[in-house]
Length: 215
Ligand SMILES: *Cc1c(COP(=O)(O)O)cnc(C)c1O
Image (cartoon, rainbow, N blue to C red; front, side, top):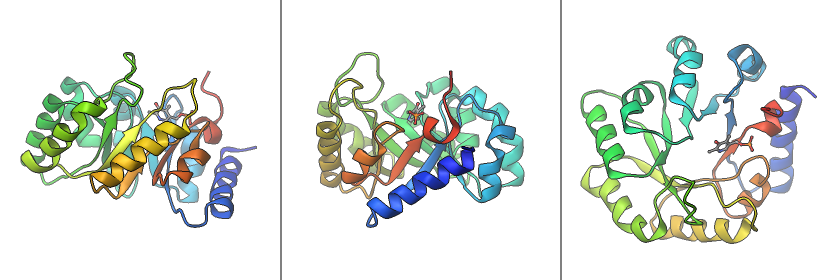
């Protein structure tokens, strides 16, 4: 199976089993180089995800300068001191999770014509090792981002706890997402994207099912 076969299989699967959904597939290309990814770009796929700013800048900067239709998604933890580089390269940030970062991004927007789209990452299981805002801080934080500083937040994002049933987390965040009036929802990876579609995910972040194992 080539990466293109893998990709088409996922597309078909979604079309056949979830005909109501029309999610964006973010092809998570972290650790893979551009040559390897290229068949998918050539096929016409536009959305790619990375989790490290430095790697993404090295990989994509030149290519994106010539191909502005490529949309890049920052899906990993974003340190404030990398916000500037991230802002320049990415179109979407899925990991907005603290005020300092939000304000930094707002300042960058004010000094530029560029506007990004944002997801607020929620730490559903309150897992210490995972980033994301906890549910009890979410109400204030989303108000701050949307109303106080005016970032274009389009939805919530989550990475549910690994060793438990994901459905209850997907159900919970889907409900919160509607509650706050967001139109988009970023959830679902290789292992659980089908489940995520049942809970109205609109942005799937799929890596290994397309590109193969990273290790
Ligand atoms: C790596 C990564 C993915 C993709 O994971 P796969 O299991 O390979 O599909 C999705 N979301 C985030 C935040 C990631 O870091």
